[in-house]
Amino acid sequence: MSSEEVTFSLNGKPAHAKIDDAETLVDSLRRSCGVAGVRVGCRNGDCGSCTAMVDDECVKTCLMLAGRVHGSEVITLEGLGTLDRPHPVQTAFMEQYAFQCGFCLPGMVFSTLSLLARIPHPDETQIRDALSGNLCRCTGYANIVKAVERAAAMVAASDQESL
Image 1 (cartoon, rainbow, N blue to C red):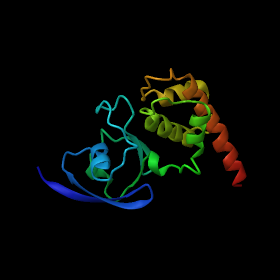
Image 2: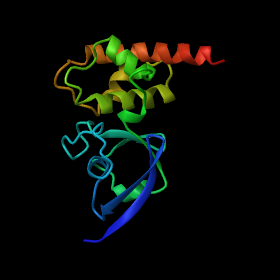
Image 3: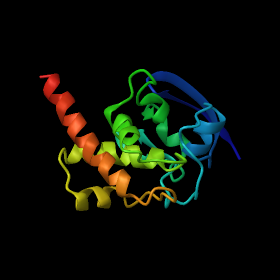
Image 4: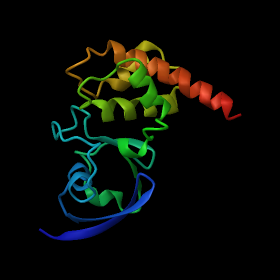
């Protein structure tokens, strides 16, 4: 098996990783970059715990070869907000108690961001559809749906403030 070096932006900073040809992005991010915000779950794209943004697209990193991110912008939960200034989606999830163990959080948060980029004011059916590729074993989804509704209101309000 051969290896190569990939260079990309990770959470706004330059990153380099030496990867094997068949290495997935989730494994490379965790092993080479020390990122814990992408979780290893099912390894077949069903659970969503490995979700990140690659070039502004919501991606299940267990299904993507690491070599494909060469020259790309990768954002994980660590790059979304800070403890002092969380992203509105992160704030909404905290306010609505929309997570317990946090394992599903990457998929829920990035699916929410992707949804709100496409549909700023989604209804419950649109929210549930957008979150359908993510499994949560703790919350029962009711608070997650409330968090997405709250996030939509918060993002809309922050957009109004920036005008």
